[in-house]
Length: 275
Image (tube, rainbow, N blue to C red; front, side):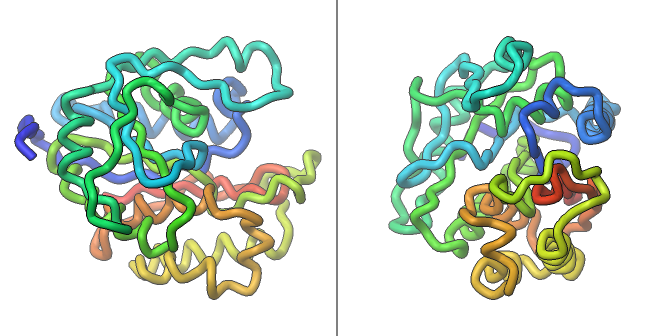
C-alpha cells in the first residue's frame, strides 16, 4: 500500500455503543461523551486523523465491501422517529483513492480475495453518522465505511480486524459502531441508564472482562460460550463491530471505557478507546 501520508501520531481505535438514533440529536450523557472524545482527539494539531474507517452494525453484506465514492450520502435507515432526525445530514467527504488501495491491500478472510468497492450504492448509515456527527461536527475528515459479512464465523470478523492494525500508523482512525448488548425486543423504554436486565449486565460484564484481560480471542468466542449470549444478542450484527476494533487494537493496547450505562434496559452503551 503506497498511499501513506506521514502521521506524527498513531491513531487510537474506538468502539462506540451507538444505541438509539435519537442520541444523535438529543442532549444526553452519551452524546456529550462522544463530543468530548472528538474534542480530545482533535486537541493537538498532529493528532488529527487524515481519514476515518468506520465499521457499522447497519451495513450487512455478502462478502466485505468498502465505500469508494467521493461524497457518501447520509442514509436514514430507520423509521418512526421525529422529522428532525431525518433532517440530519453528515456531508463528510469520502476518499476514493484510499478506498481503492484498502480494497486491494485487505483480503476477505474467507477466500483471500480483495475487498469489494462500492461506488454509489451505500454511503454512511446511522451507525456511522450518528456518532461521527457529535464527535466531528465539521464533517471535514474523509470517511470510508466497511461492511460486515454476517454469513461468516466470528473468528473471521476478528481476522479482518487484525488486518486493520497497520492503518493506525497511517493516520487512519478506526471507529467501530455497535453495542455490547442489543436486544430491541426486550426494551423497557422507561428504564433509567443505571437499570438493566440481569442477563444484559452479565453479558456486558463478560465483554468488559475480556477487554480488560486483553483476551481478544475470548471476545470472538463469547457468542458461542456465554450462557446469556442469545438474550444479549438475538442476532449478532451489533456485536461484530467490536471484533474489528479489538482485532485492530491487538492484545497489547491499553483500553479505557466510557458510557458504561444502558438504554431501555437491554442496550448496553459501553464504549471503548484503545491506545
